[in-house]
Length: 246
Ligand code: GLN
Image 1 (cartoon, helix red, strand yellow):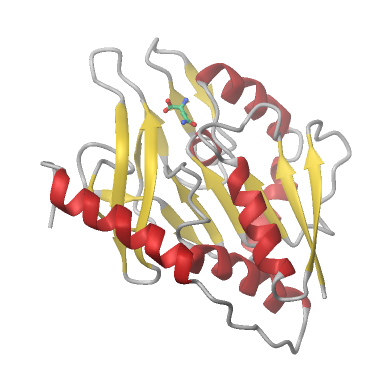
Image 2: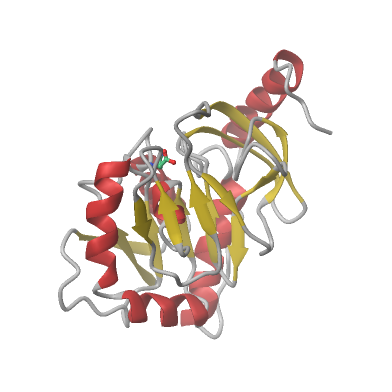
């Protein structure tokens, strides 16, 4: 079996170990005998998403984000139909923010988003950045651990990835983290997120296989090390952090 992953703007959107997500997906596919072909896209001209089984967009600084947004505008409609048709996707921080209507920077500049989903993000120059390790409890994916560093506060009414137990997530207000829409995950979690949250990685792979193959075996693989990493961070955060929201 083969899957093709489109990695958008790896040269610009690549903060805090985001590339590790690609390595995790590649490895977890390999361990199941699936060839994951990685296509890096730095220029979206003439890009068609018809061969794209999964896509990934990492996070970036405000500057990189504004350059990337212009690039993505060129294929906005393609993107929208891929998301609507259930292509699994992982979008992180800046890559998540620009799927919404706009991102207002701390300097007050309003960067128009792709407006594929109905939400917005705002930074404020009189408010602190939301930085630190984060623990999220998700009904669908269990305990999710990661690291966040963003000025933007995102507000939406979609299904979320889960409830924030330690840290901030979408904003410093509603204790919700991320967004789930069809098979698209938007999240503030860097770190990278997938190696220590293997259920999320497998969700993306399984949904991609589901879209492409009518019949397949999804092999169980040993997650002992991944689970130890996840529990270690979970316990550390529950014990050590004063900001626990249960
Ligand atoms: N520029 C955005 C913010 O600070 C995104 C940062 C990121 O991708 N980590 O909110």
